[in-house]
Image (cartoon, rainbow, N blue to C red):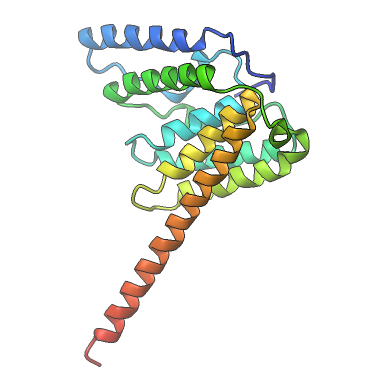
Length: 216
């Protein structure tokens, strides 16, 4: 899946294009309720997508109730992390990833959600604190992407939400050169790591308590 690493055009009618796609999907779904959207179609709606856009799409889909989506998306996230570390403008994502299909219900919701994300981003984000998006920080962000991909890969209850939000903020922050969004990405990701540690301690302590309670 080729991409380019061009700066994001904030004047792009992408949000409206996604709104129109959502309306078309809703109309088609009324006539044929089995109509479903796959990941490759999401990419095509964005036209020539940058690595940051692909990362955001992966993060958004990873939180949807699609069986195995988090596991497969994490593989794509790691591929993007590798490309990010090497400053590549394109990335080869797993073929199976593009074939993932959303349900008819979640196809429409995903289109509407992406349109909302772009609308709010165009409204609130702007270039600021640009040192956070300097090319010299790519190694840090590449490592961060890989770490969040690992958290998404783990089979934790609601474990995809915070790392996915962190990656969405990272993607938008990089597209808009908005250092505040990148800072929020770090804060959200730190909360995701804290959740993993808390859950690990809870499970470990519960297992230890159950073990010591056994009548040996």
